[in-house]
Image 1 (cartoon, rainbow, N blue to C red):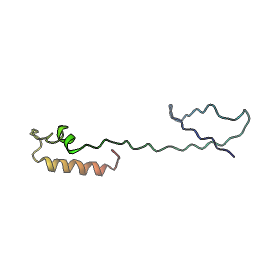
Image 2 (spheres, rainbow, N blue to C red):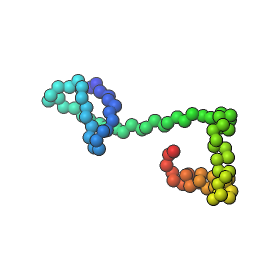
Image 3 (cartoon, helix red, strand yellow):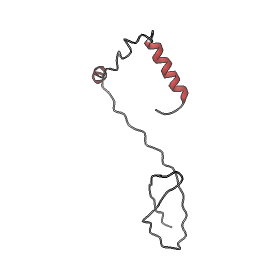
Image 4 (cartoon, rainbow, N blue to C red):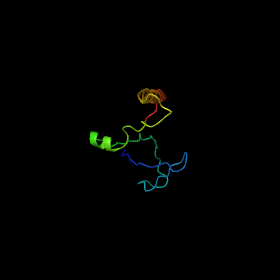
Length: 87
């Protein structure tokens, strides 16, 4: 038995349309649908110089609602880790 592999995108909930298959009317086929894992997005890596020029360092320095930016950042990281999701 020769398998035909196709990658399709679901465009309407619960439905998929396959066309161009090498089979004729009346042929019996077995259909197995497996979800593909999304590939992780690759994020560009910043050099130290790029990071310094990015404006991210010192971003919170003038915020009056954050007394200790290190503690605030730590709390945000802990909350993000507890969510258990992926970024």
